[in-house]
Length: 487
Image 1: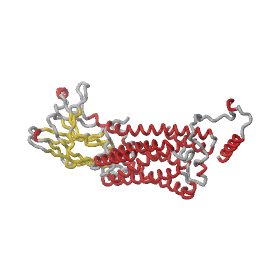
Image 2 (image 1 turned 30 degrees about the vertical axis):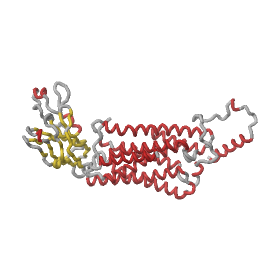
Image 3 (image 1 turned 90 degrees about the horizontal axis):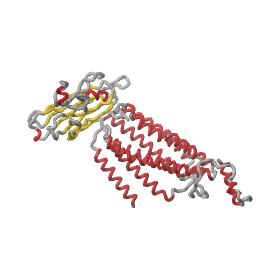
């Protein structure tokens, strides 16, 4: 009953997230009654940021940022004076061309009285100067409210991008009396190869290659599974599930990015499916590695009393990861704010750390038990698994390295796929699969305090009390010898 309540609450939370993000469009940045917020001595609306490639022989096509029907609205109570609002578009390397300070003091975006006395600007104006590296940038345009006017509209235009970089757009005004002004409209950002933002563009090809890799791994695994289906152990069924989920996840991600790149609007349904399959796969993968480390299906038939704890850990990880991935991917392209991202990432990071600690603790206990009973065939496969796990486990504030940002996502996908491949090789279905399966006459639930140090070839002094071992002891020794021979 508690588990059902947990899943019901999880479903409601996910539905609320979907309702929140379902109306957001991707490379089409929409502004729906967005209010200006105070930043220093200026008032700002964040218009978006994207990595954009300049057209070249490698990336033929047009790159541009287009303003479409961007309208400012103010209440009648604030309409008895004239005022001006600016839109400033700049490449991240040119950020120092915006704002200034007098006598080395605090940097201001709007011209202060001290700066006006120095003659560098007019008090109340936006401070900016032309870039020496990128002539004609930053691009600054403005629109004015005349007395008694309630609306002002920016001229619709396209700004061609001729230099590869991370571009940022802000709407700014410097008038404290201009209160409750909102921005309506949209901007469209395009790369030479389509509407995918520069940080995401390489991922479309990556997921295409990963789809192919999962198909190849699936052909290998399913062919082995079909040939040896009578000898399948429960652990191999879990591997089959992970491979199937991985194939669906990669396919959904590829088509999600392909449609996004073509239309400029991210398909919410496709993204939700990709996120959900990916989250389920990551959850099952972690549970699979944990169960392998515990010896499930190999040295123990069930997880016993800890089954509920494993299930609850998996369910909690799924919920935390699903919420994070939905907010990060469904209909959004700009980076989350630092606090929002930290709030969502922290629970997932803590649960991941808990998984890792439990996995290695369980793996150590399983190796101890196998070594104590000299079951060398199983011990060998678990040592190889441990080595692989240890091998695979062995600050950019302004997004200046955006062109390599996709590598982080790709790295974790490749790492997960590599670990899955190792498990597929070590536990591949074969005529000898049952050799690694749990045997009813093995009792592995007793507590062991042995270490991973190889036992000495001779018994210790406190074990030599009986110079004439019993028949049962000889039988046990013979059984262990047989186990070593079969290894």
